[in-house]
Image: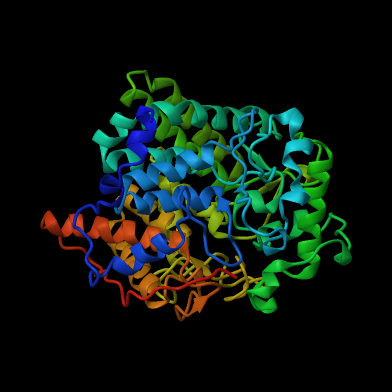
Length: 480
């Protein structure tokens, strides 16, 4: 057995729980059980039914929570995903499990045809993947995972192995996806941004001729109520865009959908900052990456900041670069950037607390869309419900800019509602009612992360504004 295999095979280290050890009755044990139930041996599925494969940004968020339970499993989560990276540097949004039946999820591997349609882009031959990407949270996750057990990370050479892949991933985005020529990255499909059904995509999608309904079968409706899922018309447009991208050999720049999105770019910038710290940990200079992060922050402000809206807006490159006049949570995520101008950070906090999102007043978690918009729906996928990962990002942003009381209250709400909903996929922003699946991996992971951060503050004698405890620790089991 080689050295890497020996290290990977150490069950005692993999099962070790960190600060404090988990007991069956501890408040975070339910979250840890969700992550254990969804673990496949090399990665974690978002849920066992509708989402039975590995998803890209899910795995990054999952690793952030897993680091508190098993740093080795958290490292493995990211390593498994990055092992499916394409030759051109892209990290695919799905890595398919070959043991899962084709009809369990659509679009399935035979739709994407990664090994053949993606050959020119360097798609791997040993694993099947999708051909699109998701937000680049991975370097941030890798840095946080390293910090959970630096000794184990150095012993395994974790950062040394993932750094070249993360650097190639960022190069792909910065060189192949600057479709507007202004330095920002564009998404070429709504699924890439991660907030799949957001009203921010309605106008850019309206130009797309949908694929015929008979040409695909929606497996998602086997697990979720139609009124909570994307419409058949929208789904047909998603399929058309993905098929056109595939048929063009996954070449970038020629599609009908190209949008500069605030959250996607903010997460790239945050991960550039993390890559700088990783480089320094490995003995290299991080100066160039920090300078790039600052330049990208400037480009984000120049191209996507809308003072009248008090937040960032998407830019539709196929409509002449026009701003998309929908207020989504995507426009608040840049709050997590440390170099954001002070006046812009203050404006984002006002918008977050104001009538459009009403955090701390009408809502406890951050709604995914503008409460006052005609397109708002408190239950339909990404058109209004509150998601735990975006609230985690906003909490981090509030804390970055000194809004400690607001951050403490949001942290408390994430932890409490995660447990109260059985670790639901998302929640009604007004009532906290569970929506979608329960037993959802990133909800469990991020609630666990915030709970551990609370415990650290309490151990240091810091009295937070909000109190965060899991309301219950029962398990769940699907995503719909």
